[in-house]
Amino acid sequence: MLRAFVPYFGTFDRFPHLSGKEAVRIMQWEAPATILGQFPSEPFLNSDLVLAVNPGDDKSTIAVLTDLVSRAFASDDAIVLTDGDPVTLYLDLPGFPEWTPLSIKGEAHLLTLGAGVSFSIVGSTQPSVGTDGAAPRG
Image (cartoon, rainbow, N blue to C red; front, top):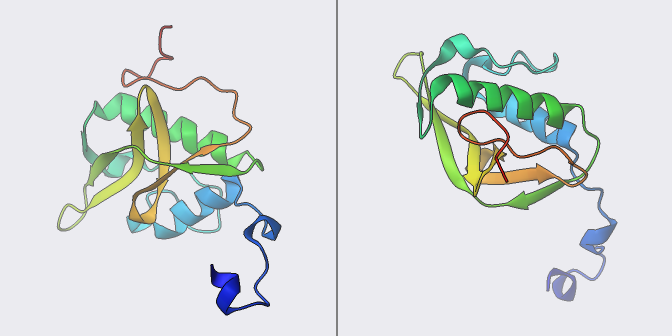
């Protein structure tokens, strides 16, 4: 449709795909209070800033988020955009801001970019993680 108005605009399949590492960099840049570390250092979750989680348990959600950030940052594979139910972290900062770095789709946790855009890694062969922090039983 856009090419009908701008004929010089290329097809989207010619643009490079966003990698897991690049997506985590976006998360790190947008995260409040450098909760994922100071950009451009290697991302890590400052779990001391997390007061509460909804839905879920603080410890297992922090473990899942730490694992997903680490795996995605290590990946040069393309991400796949998807949807999911948001997981909100309430932070120990003035005004107790909310941050939604995760979502849940079925049994799988997904990382979330700003505006609630969830993603998974194309080449990921890792099992999804349940709300108790353990791989789902199948």
